[in-house]
Structure formats: structure tokens, C-alpha cells
Length: 207
Ligand SMILES: N[C@@H](CCC(=O)N[C@@H](CS)C(=O)NCC(=O)O)C(=O)O
Image (cartoon, rainbow, N blue to C red):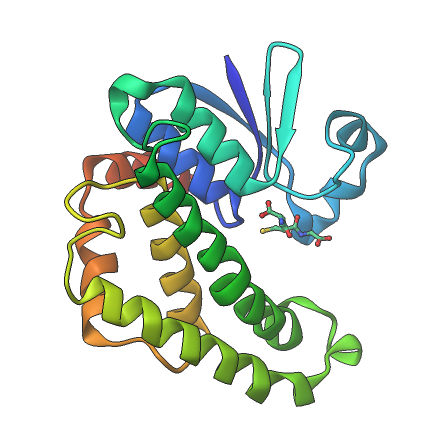
């Protein structure tokens, strides 16, 4: 059985949603960073990266959300949620995944930390305008791309769509500039997928 460490309100949400899309049973082991539970030595023995999410399968453990999600999707090629390793489509998939993490998530995470997550005394509000501007410029590129296709890779829902939807949700929560109607509609459309609904039923109703 796959164990997922984290809570549904963290990046673990991306892993839990993917597992519902793959229809693979998993067990959620609650590790809540808001309560500092990720600092526990028992958790560091499982995940020396010290953050959530992380997964374990038998005696194998894996951290970093994008590594976890691509690895999981690769385990179930019949589910067609990621292009085959080495294919051009996989190159394009990973290009957008990398763009999501470095060009969209990184500036948003700076905003998140300095508006919500860090204790007030540790926040640096001066960072926010520049991070918002960086996000908006990248978001414009994504919006133009999504204007012409239903999913990032074209006609099929893939792992990278989970990351994009999650980041659009962060951006909406932070009132970040750059979101357009098309991106909000894309997020709304994907939230009706049975996989997402099942994630919501299983994990959000309990928290
Ligand atoms: N690069 C990591 C980032 C993981 C991360 O920062 N997770 C947050 C929760 S969403 C966390 O564990 N924060 C606790 C901390 O930074 O101390 C990934 O993509 O998995």
C-alpha cells in the first residue's frame, strides 16, 4: 500500500488527487507542517528532505511533489496520465512541469510565505510586488497557451494539469495578477473530474 505523508491542504493534495485519477489505493499519514509535525525525527528518518509530501511504497521512499507524481504516473502507463519516458511529448510535459515549478510556483511561494505562512515578524513585504510581477509575466504565457487547448498538452489530461490547477488556486487565493477567465474556467472544468471529486470526498470532507 502506498503511504502519503502530509495533509490535503499542502502540496500533498497534488499527489492525493493524482492517486484518485490513477485509481490506486493509498493511505494518508497525517504530517501537518502548520503544527510543526514535519520536524519530528521519526519523519526525518523517512524523508530527510524534511518537508511534505513524501510517499513510501514498501521500503522505498520518495520526496518532492513533481518527482513523486511523475514516478507514480510512470508506474501505471495504461492510465495514460503521463507521456512515455524519452518521448517528445514527455519532453514537452516536463518542460511545462518545470515552468510550473520555477516560473509560477517559486514567485507565488514567496508571496505565500511573506503574506500568510511566516510569523509576522519574519515577513518581508517589500518582496511581494516583484514576486507578483514575475508571476504575472509567467501567467500570461500560460494563459496564452491554454487559450488554444483544453489541457496543457492538448487533448488529454496529464500530471502537469494537476500542478497548473493547484497553482491557479494558489494565485486566486493570493489575488495574484495575471489570471484570466480562460485559466479560471480551466480550473473550474478540471474540478469536476471524477478523480478530483473523489479526492474531495475522501480527504477534504474530513478536515
Ligand atoms: N519542493 C518541495 C516543497 C515542499 C514544501 O515546501 N512543502 C511545504 C508544505 S506544502 C512544507 O513542508 N513546508 C514546511 C517547511 O517549509 O518547513 C515539493 O515540491 O515537494
